[in-house]
Image: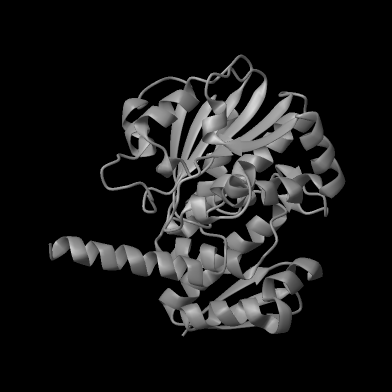
Length: 322
């Protein structure tokens, strides 16, 4: 049997590390097949050599992340142990712990994975960023957070969010109401993110003043967007012509973030995704960056990550048998 000791005298951090009813530590013990006990501010790990080594790396990484201000949630535990398991735990040092902005409820929005941190860094460093990855990776929410940060710091005067109103099995014509009523359901995730950041009163006031604009992609045609932070969501459902039109709206002192999931293209088979094409066309252009998220960056319920993995495995098997 092997044994390792980790010394720490911060009772608050220890309490968070162990979790409610020792739930966090129970997960680590199960993951590595070890026993973890706390005695006089010392965390003792007992088990086989490989198990103790993995548990020690995970616990030390979690303590370092906590020191940077990151809360130790169930997701954080799973994420850190998966990074250790793959032998890439050194990448965790890239997590800075810095908050992007504060929501109306006082919650600090910050990157929770290395992939999210890299995405944020690219947005800071480039005028146009394409964020590509599966559902639940924070592509849109983090982009909105960066837009709110830029607005609050007076780097832009407007926030513009748009997405194509592409039908995914339902027909717009059958929906009740006028055109705006029909496209609003497609824009709802963007409204929700902004509402969360600004709160009801500020959000409504900024919308009325035109400081915040949420509109279908078709409404961007013919415009030049100066001093704005512009986000195109669900870009996998744009055509080549649409995404070119959008990209050429870029005005002075503006920034663009384009997000999409190329595994969820709702365009007719005859159409080619503008996002897929744009990644190829824009490759190598200075001040334009592409970031690809993986299933590790999923920060929703743990089952979302498992579902994505299952579909990737299924699709891979289908390709091999084709």
